[in-house]
Amino acid sequence: MLMKKELYQQARRIILLLKKKQLSDDLRMRVCGLSGDLFRVKSQWALAIKEYRIAQEIVLNTQSLDLLPRIHSGLAVCYIRIKRFAGALCVLEEILQTQALSSALDQTYYLKGIVLFKTGDFGAAQHAFRRALEC
Image: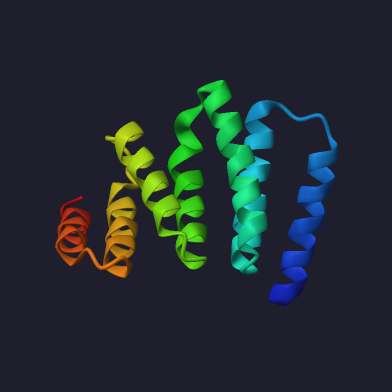
C-alpha cells in the first residue's frame, strides 16, 4: 500500500507530465484544478491559488462552467487559510451570483459563514450558516 507522501508524489508527477502535453482546454482546466487540490492538501497556499486562478481563467474563457463551483470553493478555502478574508468573500459572492442553482450552495454558505465569523460580523455569519442548513 502506498503512503500518503508517495501518492502525492505520483499524482504530482502525473500532473507535471500532463501539463507538458497539448491538452484541450477542458482537460487543462481539470489538470490545473487537480494541481490546485494537491497543493492545497500540502498546505502550499500560494501555489494552489495560482493553479486555481489558471483553471478559473480557462473556465471563463471557454464558458465551461461545470467545474467553476469546485474551483471557486478551493480558491476560497486557500484564501481563508492565509487569512485573506476579503478575497475569500469575493470568490464566495461570485459563486452565489453565478451558480444560483449549484449543488454546492450549502458549502458556499458554510464557507461564507466562517469568513464572516472570523471578521467579526456575527449576525451575517449566523444568517449564512442558516442558509447553509436550508440548502
